[in-house]
Image 1 (cartoon, rainbow, N blue to C red):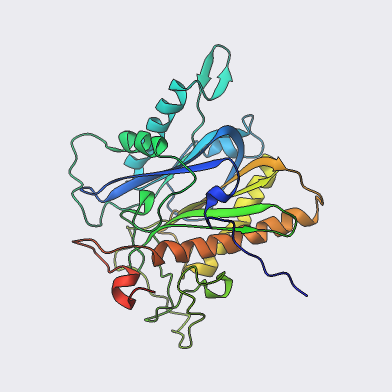
Image 2 (image 1 turned 45 degrees about the vertical axis):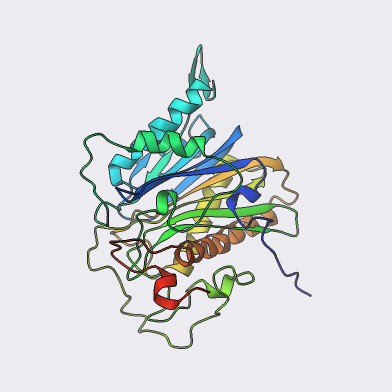
Length: 335
């Protein structure tokens, strides 16, 4: 008999013990930043599959590079301006004496990725780049509980026809390992099926975490996916995390596997106009028992968690004045 899996107690990426998440947003600009951090440094990897990424310090995460552990990961709106959110996070970490020790110097390692929300609602005519301040505020807000939907890096996010948002999900495996995902959904394509309220990720839903509506019964032509009219407003960026003891190379493979979650929850995904990227984080507190089987199961769990997190980000988005697209709840009604 197959064991029915269940989320962790929060159904958030912070179900991985030790991880903390903070959100910050500027409601005038309609943008924001999300920070994942921990009191202890953690191993990280990354995999990029979109054609238009915006990143900082991702080369450092390649399996052949010297530094394997990081102090925080940043997801942000703002296109290339948003990469400065990592500077704000570095300020806070340096003040706390946290980072990579290079002789007498302490250098916080903070990889970051951005999505393009400049063409959405909000006043983008700032006189000073706001993202370093948003990074500091998000770091200061970091805790085990955080809000989903129109929050943090998902504040200004949209999909084709509906608002995007910040999503998260977790699962506890029979091995005892926890796997979880965090994502800012700003896709060129859709998270829902045609004109229906049903999510592409429905087969992977646990309980009614995004409505419990099941799979759609009416399917659009799969050869002609629905996309945004303007292709320059996109990118879905995320993080998968686990308490498993993984190397940097194994984290890279975990991030690679998690991209299946994008393809299961967004149609289309990984387009030339998306900068789709996934970081992977491993806290290393729970050993791997089977070096062949466990990484496979962890990768599959990362993909299903990511699909669920994407649906939850759209499901929890809320309506605000001046929205380019309606929130899921405004179009289909609250669950």
